[in-house]
Amino acid sequence: MRIKHFISRKTSLPSYLSSDQEIQTKPAVSTSKASLRAGLFRKRTKRSYENNLAGYIFISPWLIGFLLLTLWPIAQSFYLSFTQYSLLNDPTWIGVNNYSEIFLKDQVFRKSMVVTFTYVLFSVPLKLFFSLMIAILLNKSLKGMNLYRTAIYFPSLIGTSVAVAVLWRNMFSLDGYINHVLGWFGIHGVGWIANPHTSLWTLILLNTWQFGSTMIIFLAGLKQIPQDLYESASVDGAGRFGKFIHITLPMLSPVMFFNLVLEIIGSFQMFTQAFIITEGGPINSTYMYALYLFEKAFKYYQMGYASALAWILLAIIAILTGINFFVSRYWVFYESDGRGSK
Image (cartoon, rainbow, N blue to C red):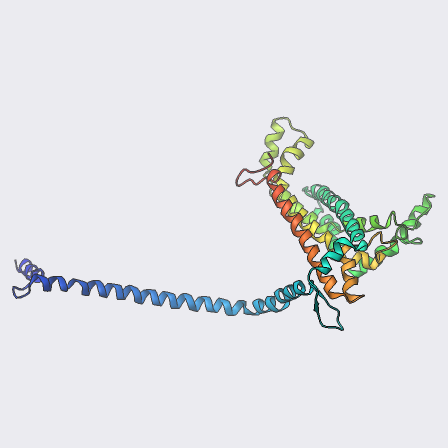
């Protein structure tokens, strides 16, 4: 009884308070809730700001390095591509003259483009095909397979180094190891590097020989293909070739697309092998685009012209990459969304 009486007294207003005064007491409660929410929001905002600040501090060395060593040189080279500039003189603005001369007058540019596109056209498919075949052979559960994988991957460990280029030049020279071995079978050797009809193929063969990284990526993709697909295909009477066409290639298509994009980009930037082995000869038969760009910049000191060549190369690679991404929707199969060749 006392509790009810206390509650009734607590909840009822005194007689000396009017209804207007009762209404005026309610905003005080709302104001206190709003101030509490504002305080919590300020605390959360402060904590979030402190966390973000700590993150920015940690990435600041990389960010500063990116701005100074990557973004600024890119912007500078874009500006220099519209100037006439050498290391001995200040840049002089000439507009699009560098680009117009490259596309309309420069015969060496056209020759280097033909050589580079020929190199890409043959080296990329050969390397992808050879890498895939080796990956399939190594995707077996045999004794000592890890040793075989290591031995086959070894050429890629030394990469596109100068030592490999020098070794390749000695192997394919007129008195090199290749002609020496051919002489055992009574075959007269040729100057593989000195012959304009075969010099480019020595570079293509070198690029194909360094297939290790691409092969490892293919091998990793093969390991991800579910084995029950092959078992189901065997039950349906599919042979090895049928399994390869209808299971392996579709399931491996994202990996193939990834390797394709990387190989195209890398092939257009090929420089070390051509510079060391052939120096662009004979008769400019191996005069790669990157080699031409290098000589314009560091042999003739035409930095503005070389910058324009660099941006043209970037545009070519970007266009080809965009085409690859567009076409990939018709042949790349993604298991997650069921999208593939149509």
